[in-house]
Amino acid sequence: MAKQTWQGGNMLYPLPAVMVSCANAAGEKDIVTVAWAGTVCTNPPMLSISLRPERHSYHIVRESGEFVVNLVTARLQRACDWCGVRSGRDFDKWAECRLTPAPATTLELAPAIAESPVSIECRVRDVLELGSHHLFLADVTAVQVEDALLDDRGRLDLARAGLTAYSHGEYFELGRRIGTFGYSVRKRPAKGARR
Image (tube, rainbow, N blue to C red; front, side, top):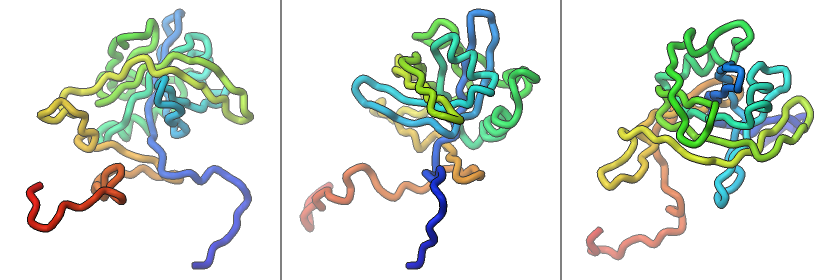
């Protein structure tokens, strides 16, 4: 298979495009779309988001030290895109996108987005000034999960949410499951054995 070598760049795709909600003590509330978000640690639970200092929400998050990562469904994708191309300096994104701020359970200022099926509450632990973006390393303090995503045993079935992903300038709805963690090494049941 032939390949070309390109100059170094960010090509780690697909990514979750999430809406990060934030607020400060002065009452400013904003929503920013972030594609550079990721899991950092399981124990303690931590994640990161990367923001440009020029973004209106950057200063709100930096000042308050908290934010909420809200997962995006196909139904929310238009609002997600809109919040990524418009500035909170010029628009009330909550009103423009008809989104509802909902109280976080462990944070003082940052609201969750009520319409999001999963809202991850975060408290900033550290800020790394890396270059064009600053990385906010955060502790996950709580996760709000929509009841409809729980199966009959009370386990999370995230496939029910209809989440979306961002890949090199395009959005995609996630769909077909092709396996579960560890399926490649799982022993197959013996012939005739009950499942």
